[in-house]
Image 1 (cartoon, rainbow, N blue to C red):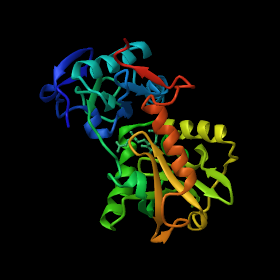
Image 2: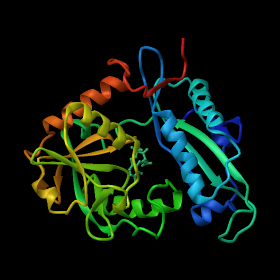
Image 3: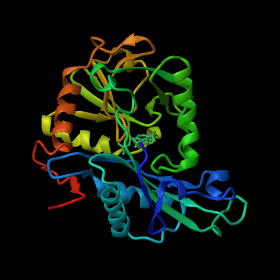
Length: 306
Ligand code: PPE
């Protein structure tokens, strides 16, 4: 459900007026940078989850894309919190977007003005309502992640998401909820919009940045929780066939949160249902994000502090 107001270049405009011109550089060449952030409902009003690392990653992505941003990190944080307040959200998905706007055509683009928007909307379970409990059926995509040196997997740059679209559309056409891409060497990389974790023989495996992944903030969150739980995590190239032998596999992402995989390429993962580690991580994650458990890492920023 859309919200009433969108923050656009420092002011609030009505949702329907937040439009762009057809010469906008980002439309032609994918020169946009974005974030996806969630605010969760708590007893103390909406709490933004890990605001600072998201804003930091937005600015880092702009640094890699060489897009000058006329706002500071504090300005952007304030814009995000104010957008939540203005729209009266209790919980929402937040999409900050920076893009090269209208002026000239031509790939270079740095003569086009930077536009910055923050929009919010209500967005429920990314991979379907049952996904969080039942798990999702996924396929390994025929599409690979771009090879190192062909783009920037660490940056959330709009144009790069054509790759994610191909992965996701192929999966949907084949009746799967999502696709997993391999990296250029054939090792497991990530989902179209999620990082991946594999539990195999009591050890957790997750790919590192050499496998063309986005360094997800939910990934970092789960790594912190796994450390608390006392699990060993190995960051290493993961062969595709390890997915077929795993006891548990789950995706992490702001939109996807923590979502179990119940099959890969029609082969059941473990028992074919959500595994106990995935469940435990979800419970911890949702207890912290909802404010039911103490925020021991300072992950929450309250939009309407009292
Ligand atoms: N990998 C990719 C390619 C990715 O897009 C995301 C987030 C992640 C990993 C997980 O990152 P993080 O959110 O920091 O844990 N994908 C965003 C966009 C989803 C969409 O469909 O739009 C998101 O989850 O908000």
